[in-house]
Amino acid sequence: MSGFFSHVVYPEQGKITQPLFAPYSASKFALDGFFSSVRKEYAVAKVNVSVTLCVLGFIDTETAIKAVSGVLNAEAAPKEECALEIIKGAALRKEEVYYDKSSWVSLLLSNPGRRIMEYLSSKNYNLERFLKN
Image (tube, rainbow, N blue to C red; front, top):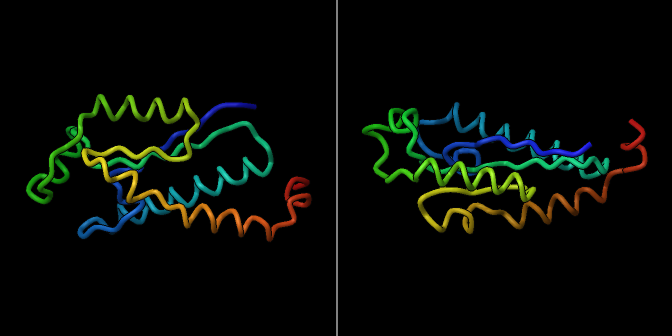
């Protein structure tokens, strides 16, 4: 079995908190946790499926512009470039794709500490028993 799965987390609220968007942000944190767990389970089970989590900033879609009108003072990133980055990230089987107008987003939101902790915690599991279930 091979393939990929991509889910869009938008706008960066699955990685950082922002005022006025608590329910939306909470749902995005939940999606990150769910799909990151699925990714690890597939890796342990050696299932050839990649999971790409897309963390997007403010993109110039009609819905986004309308949602933050008068609230957010930022320039939206082009939706066409965003779509291309999502496709490239999924095709390259990246774990996460970051896209925003700012070039700092991927540097600041990527979390090497999380990857180290995930690796270390995976050593505590009886993988043979996991693979039998």
